[in-house]
Image (tube, rainbow, N blue to C red; front, side, top):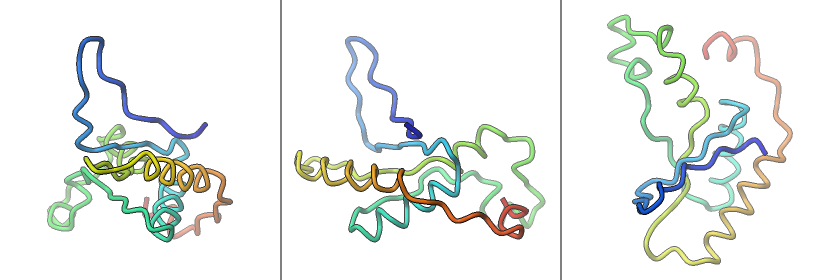
Amino acid sequence: PGLRLPEPAPPGGRHAYHLFVVRFEEGSARRRAAYDHLHAGGVGVQLHYIPIPVHGLYRSLGYTMNALPEAQAYYEQALSLPVFPSMSGQDCERVARVVREALELELEPASPALREAS
């Protein structure tokens, strides 16, 4: 609960899984807590596909996320978990365990300044 996994390949198809992106349905606070917990546990995680208006140059040109609610939701929720050819079943179990732990963490309430910035 609280975690959306990548869609499976359609019938008869194969999934490339060049990235394994999960989405934390609670949003950016949960994603951040998960990122920190996974990183501290030695699990290499990444943020991918940062929306263009979030990059400094485009912000300085006046671009905003105001008209992009789906991009905003994706950015606040998405986290790429490790996936690579030599990843063992034991590696997968360890990542899954640390993700489960991250979903159970108590979240700190966001400060008013952080809520306004997001």
